[in-house]
Image (cartoon, helix red, strand yellow):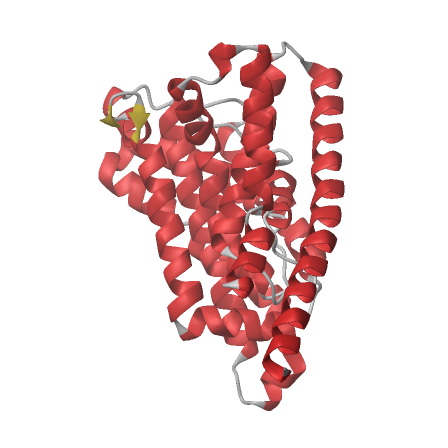
Length: 329
């Protein structure tokens, strides 16, 4: 029972932060605490959430993919342009699967050529964005097809777009992989000690490439959904989105040094970022003021996270000590 209490303290810190923010905003403006507004927040973060789910295993294995924003825009551009050429179903399939070769290239550069993942994907980020600029001639493109928009705007329930369902499916899929499959267990093992994994005969390079491919496919699917949602695609849509996704993953508890992290923690981190962004719009903050407010809130969350973790660890250690003392007596 005491161990479970300590675990709840550690796992529920972001829920406490989000609860405090919602209660504070509801106090100043009761309209904020509106189920429709909360649904809009989930809907808004679903695109980033899908990308975060794809990169979670990769970051647990101690690697980064800075190119996901460019993969998102390139796959979106390809899908929008192909809708007129080969039809909606095939365009969606091709757009989603376009993440495979892009993720494969990232994986090969990192696993086979031993290039640091940050540097390698920073380079491919420029390549993929350049291809998107080239395909669009530096102009936004649109399918102008209402049926294509239904991929993201169709409502499964009143005021609940299907993009929320996509996000939920990705959460369940990655959670299952991380919890019950060899692929997920090896992600934690590789992130924890890559040399020990090599000595144990784990195919580290193979799994690293697989993690990059998963990240690429999730990012390309997010690009397809985004292009459907706004019925447009542009090479500038993915600027800085990689940093936002990584920030959400790290805030959600995935260690930058690898080997540590939980899927539902990442979900909380992504929703928290969406909540902060929603608040900035609610307060009428734009431009530099919006960036300043968002940065201050995130800095506060990080400070709270560190302080809370230290307090929770002390409580957990105290409970364990008392448990051992009682057992010995």
